Each structure stands twice: as C-alpha cells, then as structure tokens.
Image 1 (cartoon, helix red, strand yellow):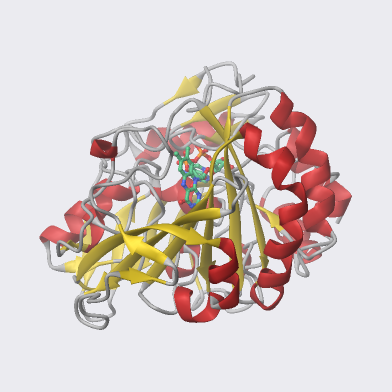
Image 2 (cartoon, rainbow, N blue to C red):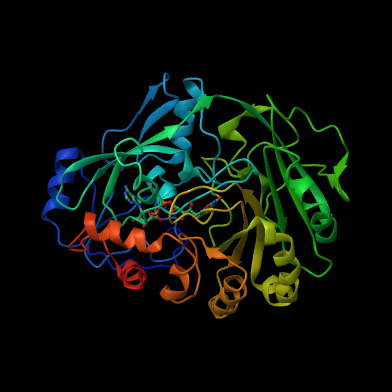
Amino acid sequence: MRNWSQHVEFTAASIDKPQTLGDLQALVASSDRIRALGTAHSFNDIADTTGIHVSVAGLPRGIEIDASHDVARVSAGMRYGEAARLLHERGWAVHNMASLGHISVAGTIATGTHGSGDRNPTLSASVRGLEIVTATGDLARLSAETDPDGFAGTIVSLGALGVVTTVDLAIEPAFDIRQYVFDDVSHAALLADFDTTFGSAYSVSFFTCWAPGLVGQVWMKRRGDTDGEWLEPGILDGTLADGKRHPLPGHDAIHCTEQGGVAGPWHERLPHFRLDFTPSSGDELQTEYLVPRDRAIAILRDLEVLAPRIHPLLHVSEIRTMCADDLWLSGAYGRDTVGIHFTWQRRPEVLGLLPDLDAFFADRGGRPHWGKLYDASAASITTRYPRFADFVALVERMDPTGKFRNRTLDALLSTG
Ligand SMILES: Cc1cc2nc3c(=O)[nH]c(=O)nc-3n(C[C@H](O)[C@H](O)[C@H](O)COP(=O)(O)OP(=O)(O)OC[C@H]3O[C@@H](n4cnc5c(N)ncnc54)[C@H](O)[C@@H]3O)c2cc1C
C-alpha cells in the first residue's frame, strides 16, 4: 500500500479496520508493533510501521454536540470535511480548515495541520479532549482538566501515544465566508505591506511559483459576520480575478471552492478544494516550513536567492499565517508563525534540493511540517522544539515497549 501521493510504499504487513471499540482495544493490546493510519495523505513515512496498520475509519461514526461548552465530540476516523458538513447541518462551525477536507480528523491534529489567518491557530489547537486506546489496550480520556501539564503534549502526537478514537473540538456558531482571488500581486508589494495584507481578512494565502518577475495571487477569505464584502477592484498591485482560479497553474478550477465573493458556508469556502473533487494535483510532493512571524519578511526576501532552483521543480508555493499555540510539537509552538509551503512536481531532483532547503530554514528558526517532505537529521529537528524532551518522557510513560514507534520516531525520540 502507498500513501496518497504514491511516493511512499508502506512497509506495514497489513491494515486492520476494527468495527467496534472492543475489537480495536483487543488488537492494540495483543500487538507488538502497531500504528494508526488516517487517510495516508502525509508525504513522508511518519505513518508507517514495521508491524501492522490500524484504521479507526470502521468504528461507528458521528458527532455529539455539547452546546453548553461549545465543544463537539467527533469520530477520529472521519474526514475533516465530513465532520464539518455534519457540524454545519446542526448550525455549528470549527474555526478553520486546511486547504482540503479529505484528511482524517485524527491525522490532521496529529501532525499540526493548519489553515491560514492571523488570529487562527493550527487545527490541532482547537482540540479540547481526546479518547485514545493506549498501549495496554485501555481507553483513556485526555483533556486539560485531567492533565493540566501534559495535555498540550498529547495532541500533535505523531501517532506515538496510541490510537485516537474521538476528538473533542472547540466549536462556534456557523458563519459565512466570501472568497476572493487577486492576480498579479508582486512579491515586492506583498513584502512591503505584509501585515496589512495578511490582516485584511479572516484567512489570507499568497500563492507564487517563484518564477522570474516574482508575482503571485492573493486568496482572501472574508467572514460575513466580521469582515464584510471586499469592495476594491484589487489589492496591492494586483487585480480581482476575472474568473475562477486553481492555485496550481494549468489545473481546472472546477476542483476549487467557490470564489468571486459569493457568500457561502464556512466549510465550503475555508478549504481551497471541494471535498468531492481531487485536491491539489495528486501528482506532487509537498514540503513546508513554519517560521517565526517576526522574521518572515526577511526570510521570504532571502529565499529569492533560491528561486532559480525552486521554480523549475515547483507546481506552486503557498504562504499562510497562524497565531501561536502551546502544543509541544506544533510548528507554531510559542510564536506567531508564517507557513512557507511548496507543492513540488513529483521529480527526483526535489529530493536533492531538500537538504539545502532545510539548511536555509534551520538557520532561520524554521520547523518542517511533520506530514510533509524534509531532509534533516533527527537531532537538528528536535532542537527546534523547546518541549521535545518532555514529549520523549511522555512517550516513554505511555508506550514503554515502543509498540507505536516507527523508524522516524525511533530516530527523533533517541535525541531527547
Ligand atoms: C493535497 C494535500 C493538501 C494538504 N494541505 C494541507 C494544509 O492545508 N495544511 C496543512 O497543515 N497540511 C496539509 N496537508 C498535509 C496533511 O494535513 C497532513 O499530512 C495530515 O497528517 C494528513 O492526515 P491523514 O489523515 O492523511 O494522516 P496520515 O498521513 O494517515 O497520518 C499522519 C499521522 O497521524 C497519525 N494518525 C492518523 N490517525 C491516527 C489515529 N486515529 N490515532 C493516532 N494517530 C493517528 C499517524 O500515525 C501519522 O503519524 C496536505 C496534504 C495533502 C495531500
């Protein structure tokens, strides 16, 4: 079996899909090596195991809303977009979504997945509680109430602590979004007015191919209840798109959520891609670095030196913002953050560029996205997370025999 991009061939001997919680608990208790697999959208081998894979997608699915606490309990194996639809039908929303809704709720939060927005933290940061089958096969409920010190270490878990079966997500009343795309925005204009541009709407992305001339697109998602409509004919030196756009040049915009300022439900506008269509290209690899917001403009200027090497291998690059959180392994831990993302063509030369890219970002405080491709030593990565030693202690306590570990985790955990 391979991952979504077909780039990683899993070594797992088989995949089990228990239909009941009891079966899942028995399976975990009796396994020496086992690892949860979500929808396999990660671009590296973070989800792999030399034992067996287990999916929670076969467990009974649904959402339970606790309106008095603004929390919804969501089945962890559901796709994020499906959970979002169910929430919306009942008048609720989560604060943000990734570019696609195709990924599982558990896989999303385990890797620190994020969308964009100056005041929006990662999707992992909206988790209020977890139900998890631990190494012994017991079912544990984790929350800040039960574990005020350690809960922040359990959410971006990389699958190392057990198999998550339900996730409690913070919710708010449903809201509308209007999405606008602007063409021909120059890097120079964006970097001269970075804060105003990213602060101009609830969620803003900048797409660029790093092509000579350095121009890109601004994608703006405005909340009906707080931002209102965008009445200008353009933004910065760019103009409002005269039709629907796909972020990857040359791809059919039918795959994308509605644009042109047409108001619609949050879950049909916050992702770039429609749930029932192929997201992105499919024939691709992805890399992303999360950098400190206060250094982002200088970093993006410095990155221009690498543009001649990046551009020929790229489909597109996306720049997004998110606010700081306190999750130990989150890319946005402890600092407002800018995500600098690359959707690569699926070509072997990309792998040759990754070490240089990591050297560039490591020098500038960049943390690689856990679910995307990077080439760096485990020791170098773990120094970028101030609470990594605490995470190692947590894993040793919850999984003393290492049944949830894999090659990547063994390397990372041995540095702590
Ligand atoms: C087209 C595309 C667009 C993307 N867009 C974004 C984006 O906008 N923003 C962003 O931040 N990322 C993005 N990503 C990356 C993606 O969000 C992450 O790779 C995410 O982890 C994928 O979720 P998954 O369900 O496929 O997880 P998998 O890849 O299956 O697993 C990822 C990790 O989660 C763990 N896991 C899965 N299920 C469980 C469980 N039940 N219990 C415990 N651990 C579990 C696995 O063990 C593994 O460590 C994108 C990826 C693709 C392919």
